[in-house]
Image (tube, one colour):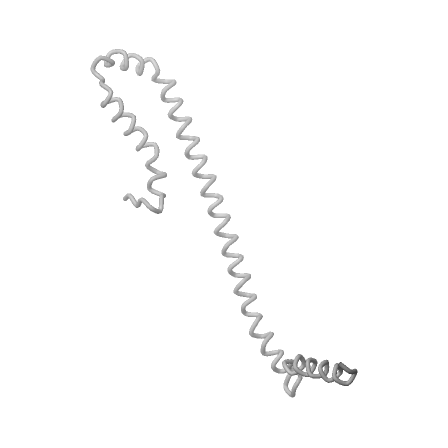
Length: 129
């Protein structure tokens, strides 16, 4: 391939690449219009980011509140068992003959369900109440 053919091929490729450039009359106005169209999108993105940050903060506070609530309930249960330990031992000793395995299982499940009730209400799959 000679020099003229290579220059013609290069010239054709450059013309094709440059044909897509917008440098005609009114370029500045079209550019300003495109920039004006992009600015509201940036404001929307900032608003969405602000909302996301607010939601993140609220969910974080709720998580802490839930954790503190669970810890408080646990401490209250431990304090109640500690306080009423003699009565619990006396009750268990006097009724041990009358309590069968089904009754103990039912009481255990009822106590577990009562403890997990707040969590069960928040589950998206199971909607109770």
